[in-house]
Image 1 (cartoon, rainbow over the protein chains, first blue to last red):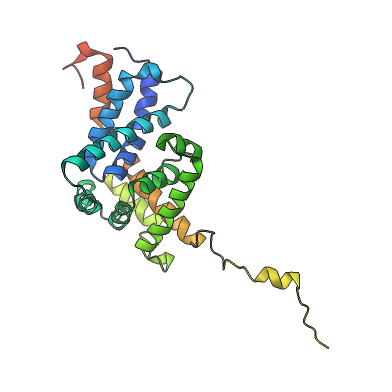
Image 2 (image 1 turned 90 degrees about the horizontal axis):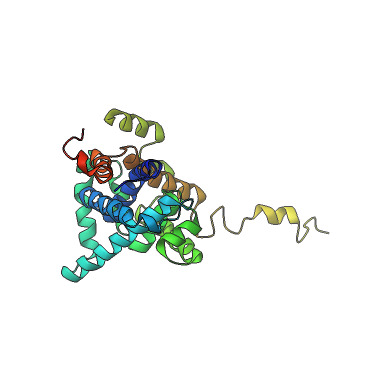
Length: 182
Length: 71
């Protein structure tokens, strides 16, 4: 199958962000990469249904989210998967990337209901507008807004931020840590 | 005689009913710290770029005859 080179480059340039989204959803790098791979295969198989000029990355995120949710539902039927086991699976995460600095934050994020987590990530990290996030999650804009707000309040409680200075390494430290890995 | 002026507008403005908090009850500074941490965690993965397996996957789909020649 021939892929339009410009479209292929555009798809590839979305991969890093798709991975970050998938890891945030699943809490597991290997599972996330399988999700991204499945997303790319599904996207290419249905590339005719993508309208050129519309938002490619929102389209890819929608596919990934739907795959994740159907997989999640399937797993839930097979093994009673609780939030606890999801949090448990996160424990291996920092080792896989060799960094512990985000562990506390990831653990807190994992305790949010899935809908709040995805809304917060799409708006707060992936850079989608509320409208785009609502399209991706197939819900109303107001619903996304309230999920994001609830996610933020819950995170603040979970991390019990009394003092902003308690909150993780500063930007300069992080830049150094990230720089060492590259 | 009293110097107190009920309903003095400037006095009213000094009393912020939300005490500097956002409507959701979260301090704006805390909200922005959460946002920073979220983006830092996300960008940490984004900065890893495109793993070879995905570039290879698209190349194989593009050129099925290219299989094995990759790299």
